[in-house]
Image (tube, rainbow, N blue to C red; front, side):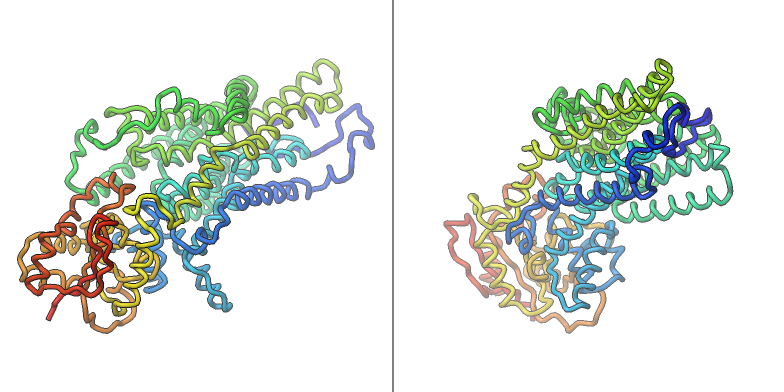
Length: 634
């Protein structure tokens, strides 16, 4: 094999393990397995399997983790979507929200299919176990496999044995950082967005192959373009079904490849399509979240407060959110990779520059989301809901390909330099190449073995499923669990229960599929959600006639679809303490204040508009009375 790895038109051609000139065949070939075409596939399977083992080892093992809900602000929404699918089937897949609006359904469809298939074979899988299994599959298999596929594009011109080593290291390195996939199980949890992020590398790889098919003469054929075009279309639809907002992350990583490698006409067309998509997205957001001042970016996200300082945010980016020694080693490797990708990339300079620019843009987005305020920061981070949680997941996707490409550049540059000095490339190339691979392997091991941040995230996930809480006002406690269990035994099937979801009553739907009018913290009053504001206003009016007319006729989306059901006999109202402290950051929490007005509740009770069914007592312990009322709808 010659020292040229790609020709002048940026062709990415896998290198074959040919015997270098000037070396005897038996000595250069080495062990026979190094010549096998199965070497790289077997190494890839081994690497992904080890990454999967690391994710499984990280996952909490407690009974509560597999049989109780995660107690976080977004968790009840995901359990509600799964229950809605299980009750009404695939017909509601595109109207999962309580107001029948769209929510990306892919993750919940996967859980639904898992539960149904298990049931077909006589196995019972509860929704909590189902959610965990799908998360482990996506995070432990799909994500490292996708990262390996994407990164393989950047080192595909290395000799086979080096590609095999990288195929083991890259999946392990991909799951080292707490930024992704682990953080998504705690932050929110952002289950759907996490799945989209795990699937994104497959689409990024397909996008790069399509660019090659359009720009490299040797690969430019109608068949090749059609094939990769269809692959991109299929993967794009799958990723968008996981979460449409991942499209903005896709642009962060693909924009520079398109700008630097595609013809000007295509770039202009892509820019027009992008602008149209942004305008459509803006109209969608304005329609969904109406009533906000969208024309003044400085007023967006008025409740946002920086969560980190600027220097701390930069450190998170430069260390891949790895602590201690692993973080310092990662920062040093990134600095070397940035220089190497620009100076030693040779005929693949455009790839190196694109990776560097994508890394820098990722850093800018994260720093703005975590540390900066103002209109520019608001605009740059609006697509990721302004907070640092989603941009944090982008960091591993920016770093691992950059390190992979830099490793490729160092190996090939060392071999080229050695050939010029000795005339015998591969005999000395190994002495330069293996230390590079060893450093990358050590980095992957340090990130996985010496990572207290990742351990803390695991402990937080475990704690979020426990019912033992110091503050009894929290979302779900032992007392609230017992109260909801008793309510399940008292109320009729499909009976509507009205209560402030922020006091933890929304977990009635999560745990038992109770027909809660407010099954999530923010059911939204757009589309078919007018009932939510109507009930709140009628309850707060103090007018008995309006109270009974509105509340008794209210109907939730959960029981209004699918199979026929009997006419609802009763409507209930539940008081279960004040709003949970961990949910007080919800912007529109005051809409539920009428449900806590003790004078108003007493007034309705004295008038006979509703009567006590279960009094849970312990008002002193919980701060408010816990009572289940039945409305007099006759």
